[in-house]
Length: 477
Image (cartoon, rainbow, N blue to C red; front, side):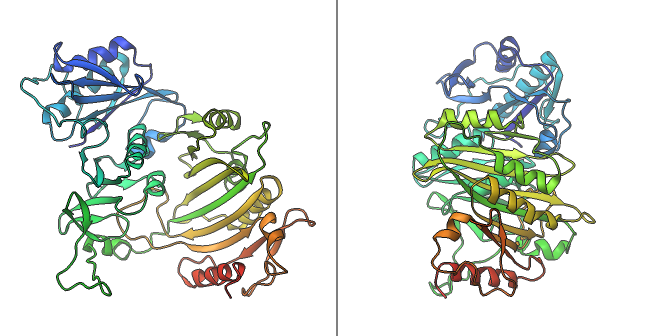
């Protein structure tokens, strides 16, 4: 059963409605706060949290409930209120469901999942006990060891929610790995996929045949010494580890064949001179305009993305957080799925924007590769482009990451920014091992260079061309 319950309401949940919902365990349950009041908790007699409730979030971006929950939502704007029950305590899950049912009834709205918010009655919590601190200290964390923090999620799409974002930061500060455990039908948001650090962090998928496997690599896993680790066969050696791969993962793409779905994946970095008049987000907007013909739909510092697209608001948030980095998610419309993650960092070189974005296309929809060069031209001319890589992937139109093999993308183009071209010795940047010469972008006196690559998902030799190009540009060949 899910541990997260979400209420979608047209009106903002007022304090009295939240309190009425929190009394789902009876008037003797204790209420506390965490995160400077941003999280309200229903606690047991020892003050340990049973249910934690995030502050309501006003969502002004169309399609987020459908993308992340598969649920119908009120017309924007609406309020998104998340409650998370302590894992392993049946009554805590009932408390969360009753909280959502009461809130939806009092304020007017719906709850997800629909079958969890079924009762308005007080839940019997006599004699209930929960995990001691520190495992219960972080509301999103279900198991805490000296190696990893484990989070159990049972949602259609694991998103970079405020809960999960806090857990990422807490694990990093404690120098722990983060392991996310989900059932087989769950997918990851690209934002979560991109944020997962290296070993021992991983996505752990429950599987009927193999028990557990890594949702990104397919390696069969087992719980050992305080974390999910790769199963090591008795005959494995350092030279030949013989890592078993889950059958479910291997079947992946071969089982369903080529569905005709594609993704246009673009990653780039811009480095702007530090200036009080600098407006951020313009590079993302420029690419979005060239690829889709319209600007992004919305953005936020977590998922769901809740704010309408605004360069000024985005810039203000980054300035307020500086010199600390700012992480953002940018989304498109349901009609043209698009999602970008943006990391804004102040460095010695200026203000950097690291962007990873993708657009999804279904069978019969043309991937607009003819717009790629124009987008690169805009970045090179007006947005201080450092480098850019464009790929085409056989992957889901909705951009979510399934626990199965989808195959790698194939490079379609690489762009080297004008400053990088200028500092490269001699004519190395223009004299490449590729069949087609690079094309100049931007001002003729200080051009960036655009390198065409095959980009055919059925021909992985495009990676060989890309690797040859990278070695050449680094002076290694």
